[in-house]
Structure formats: structure tokens, C-alpha cells
Length: 391
Image (cartoon, rainbow, N blue to C red; front, side, top):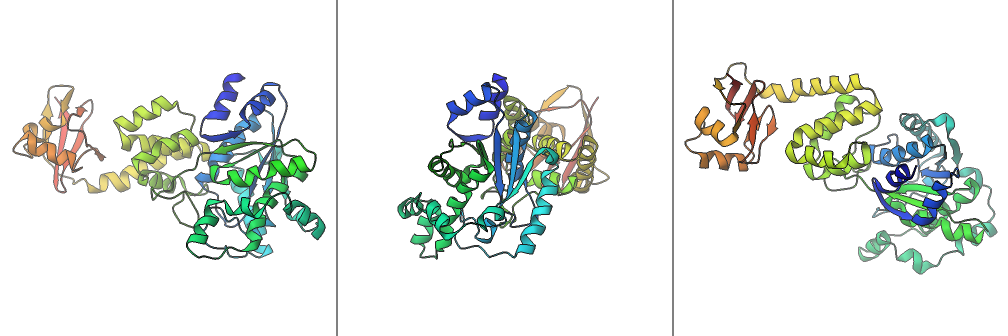
């Protein structure tokens, strides 16, 4: 159990509040009420959401209760986190339609039948103004203005809606009727999740613990995965779409995907990424597709990708060369075996420029050794191809 707890509190986790207290609760065998809230502001859940959902599923497997909250009231305000302008106000019909879609998608990862489902309109629509003022009195204006996104808006002379100041207070108050022991969310939600602790204390409750998860960078390799930025991979994307999008992510972002979206040993993941980035992406994509769909879907997506994107560039006819050894240096293969360059120095420059690939995988290390256990296609530049086999 201690090993499971260590994994729960470390893998893909940015911060734990308060770690020692949470560890003691988990080791005691206490079954926790775990809050996860989401504002249904769109139709798609993404792999960014899946980071938290996967962690929730692991808690659920240990017998803890997942309390799934739809912010159908707070969605009308819009979470200001990471936004440089006030969000568009949604209608009740739009919010409810999005809620049902979210629930369906979350069911790919969580056992929804075992979750408690909440909507915060149930209590916020009933609160009196006196009760709202009581919640608001928990924080000061200066505490709100310390938030990075508000500071950025002030410097840019952009509007801050006063109602947005209330958002973290409302998210914090949600933990009272939900009786939350622990809240999970992305690291960008830490301020909002922390807001619950003083509110719970004021209401005579035990302050909740917090597990803030790492954020996924989107397919653009720059910004957090976001529906509004369009750099996301949706849980309801087809297997082929998922694989294609994973193949487009920058190599340097891959490790976080492995850490947050798979159970693969992290040292193994680092090795895969270092040795064969393209193969590592295929492996990563197939792992994700397998738990969202099944193994057969993952295999088919890989074959479709190879047929569509890898083999389409390969001409039907090309020169063939055979070598006797089991493996050969990439520079020798290019210049000596195939004669595509006049020297190893020219071959080295092509490799370093990213102009050389084997079976569609780019080779950037001039010292790379190519294993010839099966026939392989070498591509140099845009037009030079050769089929290499072992004699």
C-alpha cells in the first residue's frame, strides 16, 4: 500500500497540500471523498483532463469516493485562470448539453456509476446575499490581485470583471456541500483549490488536502493543452486521429505525456525517447489508444498511419543494396554502401540537418548504428531512396 500511495502522490504530480497529512489518511485506510470540478464550457474533454481523470481512477480503484462536480453555475462566470479577457457567458441549455457530453467522455476512464455527481447551481441559486457576503469576507481584494492573470491584465490595461474575483471563492465553497477531503485538479487551479481551505475552516470543517497535477503542453509544443487554442487531443477523437496528433507533438514534450498518461516505467520511457523518438511516439500513442479504446484499435491505427504517412513517400522502384554485417554505421551506409555522398563528412552534414531517415524515422545522430535484421528503406534528402537488406 505504501508503494501505491507513493505512486499516487508523485507520478505526474506538481504539488501536494498537505503531503504528510494526506499520507497519514491514506495509510490509515480512511476512505476519502475526492472532489473534481469542471466547468462545462465546451463539448470536448481532452488528454489534459485525462491527466486528472486517470489519477482519480486510481483513487477510485482503492475504494475512495469520487465526487464529480459540474460547475453549471460557475460556468456562467467563467474561470479567469490563464485568461487575458473575460469569458463569454453561456446559456443554461448550452451548459447542460456540455455536462452530459462531459459525463459520457469521463466514463471512458472513470466508473461513473460509482461516482457522486453534483451541480453547483443546486446551492448557489439558493444562497441569500448575506450568505454570499459571508463567503466573500473570507478573502481580501489584495489577495485576489496577487494572482498572475490579474496582474497581467492590469499591466495590459485589460478589463477585470468584479464577478471574476468571486470565482475562486465559489470553487472553494463547493467543497462545503460536497464534504470534500481531497481535491484534484491541474496545477493552474492551485489558487482556486486552496481557496477551499480557509472557507472550510471558517465553517468548522477540516480543510481539504490538494493534489495539483502537471499540465500537458498541447500539440503546438508551446501552450497548455486547451480547447480554446485548438491544440488539444480529445478523448472522443478516433484512434487514427489520436495517433496522428501524438506524432505531431515535439520530442521534448513526450516525457510528460508518458508520465501522466501511461503506467510505463519512466526510465524505460526516457530510453525509448532518447533512442528512437518516432518509435517512442508510436508506442505512446498506442498505449493511450489502448486504454481509451482497446489493443486492436491501437494496432489498426498504427497500420493506418504507416500506410498513409510513411509509405506514401516511398517509390515502388529503388536501388537495393545488401550488407553482410548485422548492423552498420549510418555514415558508412550513406556514403560507402549506397554512394549517395562523396564522403562521410558530407553524409554527416546531411544527418545533422535532419535529411536522413530509416523506415520513416529521422536519424540525427552521426554515430547511429542501423540494425539490419529486416529489410529497411533509407531516404537521403528528398529524392534518394535505397532498400537495404542483410545478405
